[in-house]
Length: 389
Image (cartoon, rainbow, N blue to C red; front, side, top):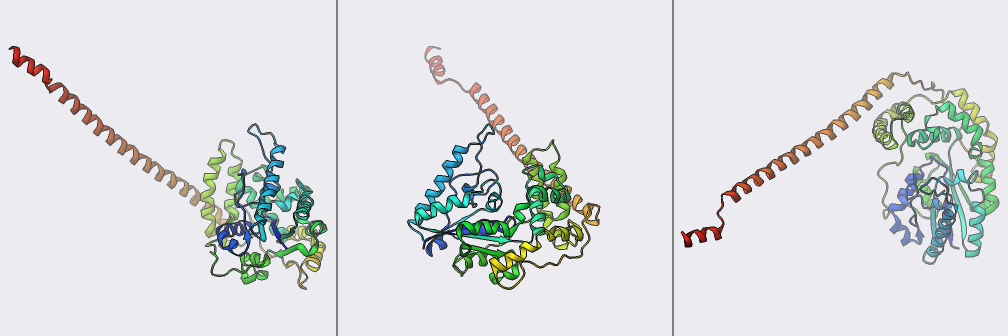
């Protein structure tokens, strides 16, 4: 039966890497009857590889008002794109990590709408979701919010974000409840639940694991990714970025410029981290809220006899902004920014010097031409003088 594979996240479970792999291997996928459609529209702050974004995206006009008629138009265009794809392929793959969140808040009826469409068009829907332990999801989402600087969350401390999430976004951490809601629409047999844990992945790779779950194994025909996408900032550079996000005199473009250097610095320091953003007691208290639900997810949706996640909470010290590495990373950050500006200025100065040299050459040639013109005798005047002297 023709199958729509809908990859819904969760957020911060290597979705960007999966999307990039699918994009870079579209031709191979098509060879085996799988279509990874292009996004038909560009949405702010959503990369084009998130080809399922039309299902949940909000569209805004130039004046800042929401255009719901456009949202419906794009939604219908996306459904038509799926219908067309099924005319050639047996499998269609859509992916967008924001769907997990939207199913609890902004687009609760999405699966019902898709199921109705699937029944009418005679194809089945299989939903794929990767789950990571709730504390890891929480901290990774906070890190991403600070890194991207999209909203007010970007200036919150991790403790403030924890309190806000427990109050406003508790549903996205209630895995059993959300899976029950999905299964009620598409059927439990059409819901693929995987752990976000290398030990549980095929070949220790989330990409190989994802491909295996949609019925393909990664062979030499496929182009593997060279490195992971969307790497997080380390704790110290996250704090630097969080403070920069507060700067009212900096534009979004300027803050994004600083982020580029913070990401580069993070690559080395992440490997050396030996602290947690939250204290062990805070993490244990947070995880206890979801312990029973996690047991049920493991039993009903995975069924391999193993717990959903390890219950171990490492006994690491809580991160402190006054740590010994902070000053070092601040110095590296400002040194990197300063050197980049200096190099840019040097390049511009060389270009200016070249332009000034060119201008002087043109001025010299212009002066030589004027002198030649003034000295040259007009040929008719010369002839006239010779005839009538």
